[in-house]
View 1: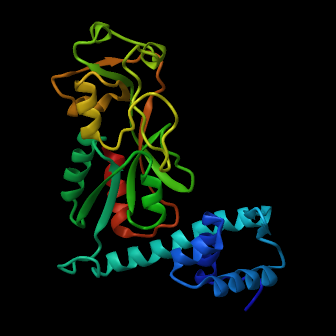
View 2: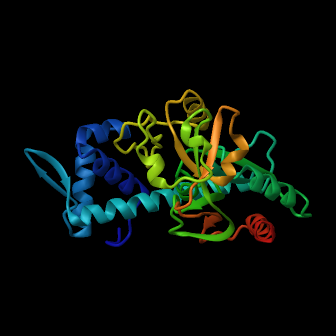
Length: 289
């Protein structure tokens, strides 16, 4: 095998070891014995001519070269998985009725409802429109869904989502609001600033997961929109959301504009290498909204 050619099997082996930093756990995760896994990693290092792992009595750690291969290997594995998923979707292999050219659109659960409805209605009226499946996801998960092929396109929001590696079109800009319990004294204010809501006694800011982890803080760990709505109504937390979130607020909530919060820009984003005609049609429709 050429020095500069890697197999997906080798990448899977290395990524498992690099993420676990333990050969035993990596072997268990891969469903194989440890000795052949160790030999495969050693063979990969010899062929590439670099050390990927530091091994000593304290355990396993990544070298500089190993850190590069972990980052590049994850991206390469995502790309191969995405290729398989999108190919099966285009051929109808993953749907009971064998429908073709289905598009999957990812968006944060509860976000951009009015914009999404306008987009879906406008696209459905196009003569070459295909089925669009809406895939709600957690905060900041859209990029991962695009990279691994579970989604073809996504509604993403800057500054919260990174658009790095994707093509995108800007669709909407809006301000942000503080969402508080309706009976709280601050709910009567015409406007607030971020400092007003960052340290309210007995009403800590809700914490959302980013890349699977929660930042430290006293606020409750939020898993979904329904949980957030309930905790705000009960007077247990406060949060900051785009203006469009007013669409799903309850009578027990109050929304107050934030004067100094950065604007939220909604983009429609897709993989930069995509050549899907169906996706191109959806993007053209979105750009006309």
